[in-house]
Image (spheres, rainbow, N blue to C red):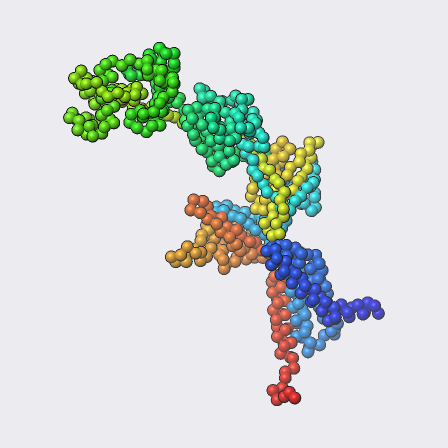
Length: 592
């Protein structure tokens, strides 16, 4: 008797009405949650994806099934009612089957690349790779894919931020080939390793730009590295231009590599040493240097570099170093050379006088010809105006065919490499769940050795995998991957704009599927395979200097054609039949 009453109650309208009311509450709650948080994920988690909603669908199915069976034995005149309820049962069955066995995933493809793996949204897993094998550690099931590896989830946070560390690691700097050095405002005397071949001296390292740096200096700032060579010349190198290098496919870790072009005088020194017979001005400079106990090559290089920085034909009206001043003062020019050099300075500084020079000057070796003419006329010329010795010497060099351009500097590139680590810090969770990036802390044990690693969630599953346990494994915390029986390769993707407008009209992509068939996807064109997989073009990004990238949504609903669509048709037909059989009000009836 109790079972009979329960049977009739479960199939009655009295049981259906509360179910409908609860269903309406779920819909209202989902709408409010999504409006308040702007998060579809959060709203779905507490409503349509909640286990209670699955129970509600199952109770709906039971109510409709029993309401139908209560009419047994069925009569032909009841066919609209039976057809409507059959349609409802098929639609509910299709929904339940889709929730349990359906597939909804994402795939990213770059032009020329292919894949048969889907990223499953709203899932979290640890991808573990060792040479020759890939396994997955589900954060819910917590089962290690490798017998020799023990994995424990020991911490988790719903949101995090990641800081990539390179060159600067807390209070230490790390450059491969050098010992770790402290990051202070003072140079690090412990750093004795040379970054350039001899004879370039070691760098002094700073973390802020000092007022009077010891040269040469390497200044590690937040977003760039500044080099000051031994003559104080400054170069800036952006850390954004670093190259990423993976050692042993990532098992050996990663480094940032930055190429620094440091100006050196090695080529200039080699050129000076190659002279079998020094020109007269250089010979006099050498003799004067030896006389005052100075190295002539390094000081002459200083002279040429300062001359070059001035940007003028003659040495600019600038002071020189004490060493150069000492050498130039010790030089003794023959009287005719001093007169010719002095008047050459006057002529080159007064362009109008040079324009009216009475004797022709050839296009080649112009200054040598001018200097020779002044030498010949030297005895007839009065004393020239007074000029600085460094400017006078540059005129003497020009007149002897030695210009500053004859001694080009070389650039010696060095490669700075620094290990890369990621610093993962918890952050306050965003109420829009789609914006959160969880972090997880894992403890791994292999052959008695244990290490702990903190990883940020990689929603695309395309980022770096991080080595652990001496490079035995590579780890990446990401969504689960699902392999499908189709292989997609992106051949070409394009954006089509409206005529004479930058606004996009359509996005299109040509793909090869299973290596032999070509398909096209667009905003309004979906492709479905014989196995029931549907491919949608969800996004496209492109730039003139790089290959286009597309996002594809892959969907499979195993009950779509067998239950959901036929059930919807039966439901519509049954509802129309029921409406057609409803008694109609007489046109002749009047109200009183």
